[in-house]
Amino acid sequence: MSKNKIIIIGSGPAGCTAAIYAARANLNPVVITGMSEGGQLIQTPDIQNWPGETSISGYDLMEKMINHAKSLGAEFISDEIHEADLSNRPFTLKGDAGEYQADTLVIATGANPRYLGLESEEKFKGNGVSACATCDGFFFRNQPVAVIGGGNTALTEALYLADICSNVYLVHRRDEFRAEKAVIDRVQQKITEGKITPVYNAVVSDILGSDLQGVSGVRVKYKDGKEEEISVNGVFVAIGHIPNTGIFADQVQTDEGTIITGTDPKYRTSTSVPGVFAAGDCADSHYRQAITSAGTGCQSALDAEKFLQENN
Ligand code: FAD
Ligand code: NAP
Image (tube, rainbow, N blue to C red; front, top):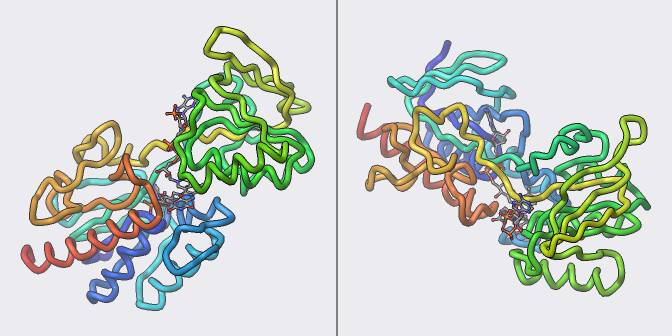
């Protein structure tokens, strides 16, 4: 088992940016990519808020970041870490493909979609229920679908599906969206065009269908107690994300799963374990943007570099 100066867990914007900075500091970074090389952004067809790119697909943006890091010498290993021992330096990680040791770690494991928790949702996952419109929208071409949620993800998913599906029911538990104004404006336009139908003040209480035919509809319950069934063939759940921090839970301090950073005032991205840094959505319950993740990814590599200078 070789010992590395720095291992970065995660290959989203935070992990890739950390890799770029660590490579330029001659730390020979190793990036463990996880199941989703490129992270959450690869799900989205159109990013319009990455500086320097008026419009770029998430896949293309992440491919550029990964190639950038690789061109500087960062090594990318396709593995998923399922066990971490942070009690001593060097830290030890166990993955499906191997074991790793490092003097410093950057945790950049991002977040995973949150689901409603309905039994029927579990039953139809992969057979009509999805959390990724770009991945699965194509299967519902010219068919009605529902998107659940009222944040940037739900609205972005609804916009994407509005161009593919016959109708998109946007089911939101309130009557006000929490997304960016520019995104809300685009959704309002689609509502006017009759491509998106908002279903306000409603929650999905059940997903209907059969094993053979998949999803045939959703039952929604309105705030005033009324219930209604809406016929759809696909359900896209977009109600937020849960930080991917389970494997570190009893070793680094978290707040409802989000890693607490800045515990050592010398290092903005420090965690409660000296030498372990965290960046991106796994340590941020507020901004959760590609650019803020990249920003803290940069900070984490600079922090790790300084830590190594001071502690080796
Ligand atoms: P992630 O992108 O979540 O990457 C996490 C990485 O960690 C992945 O590579 C994963 O494989 C890896 N990983 C996880 N667990 C393990 C493990 N145990 N072992 C090894 N590796 C592991 N933001 C914007 O700024 N603009 C947008 O237009 C935009 N659109 C979005 C559209 C959608 C549909 C979604 C879901 C999000 C969007 N976001 C957007 C938010 C943005 O994607 C996130 O803020 C950003 O990707 C977070 O980056 P990250 O590097 O922290 O984590
Ligand atoms: P989010 O902002 O947390 O929004 C989650 C939405 O789901 C909210 O509207 C919430 O309702 C609703 N919700 C939560 N739990 C629910 C439940 N159990 N039942 C029904 N509805 C529920 O999450 P997100 O939209 O995934 O966005 C995450 C982050 O990524 C944000 O920071 C966002 O800005 C970023 N992002 C950015 C872009 C972009 O810049 N274009 C695109 C996608 C994502 P309430 O509103 O009532 O709380």
